[in-house]
Length: 397
Image 1 (tube, rainbow, N blue to C red):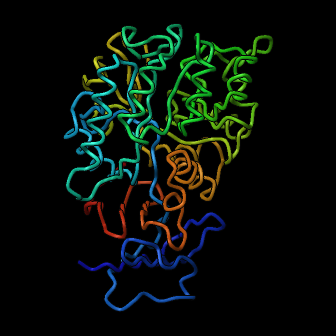
Image 2: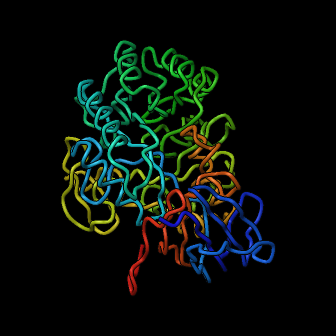
Image 3: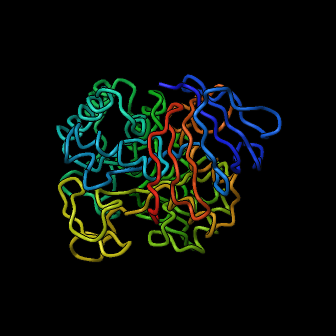
């Protein structure tokens, strides 16, 4: 296998600049050179990718993600998670956190075991499973959204200890409501165990949100959705997420969960240091209209709207990371450098892998996404090898 790859003639997006024409040289799975094309040359025998007219970005990383291609993280076992990891390559996604929903403790333990088994499966081109995001079960019933009521409960430290022990460092984020009994204590405990506490599915008022930040919370789950809002006399969690620099806010940039003008407001308030793009995608991602699974629920999709069977309650999304990138540029006015930061580097930091992923820099893993101007994925590269290539004549994301 040729372990050298050269990406030529594209607009290469680094943390400092957009270089056009740029050059990226990869060898043995890592980036050996990134910079102007005139300052280096491809090595003899390298596989050449002509990225003319395309954007060359770090591989995108999704830190809030439930499923894709008909498979659900909690419903289809390790084999399903493996299929998901391969499907994500179509969208320029090279890493993700398998995300659960509120469930019985035994079901969460099974999801952890399935994720570990999928991670250990024989190597083949796939997005890297970078750990887990436990969304719930310690959330507020008032803001449960599409989470199953039977899986929701107050914080239980015995359960958490067992989960973290079973996951062996793989739980990177846990979403919880800080106003629940034991909520602030759980935030302190998670922080002490190197798990990011993310506040969400919550009726917290502003003071409780401040207390959560003081306790160690660093993240807000899907900004504006399933949380107390922005009111001029009763500011809630959404107001705190916008206003407080201590919280990095997830944004589902599909135009359904958050109106484009509110996405623009979030960008103006939070900026590149405080906003991370996520999809909250379900098994319906990339499939089209129909009925699908979200944990134990049936959900339905019509066009780009994903709901419970009531047709009203939003239940995740069909958004892809390349779609989120395209929308973010359009909705917020951020530039390509900001986009790479919010869709790759900040997520890599949340997963604890920013030393080797999340940006185009010498020495980092050669995880790279090449997008056409409409953000259709042309190539996805994992560890310096082409893992996905757009078929001739293929259209859309």
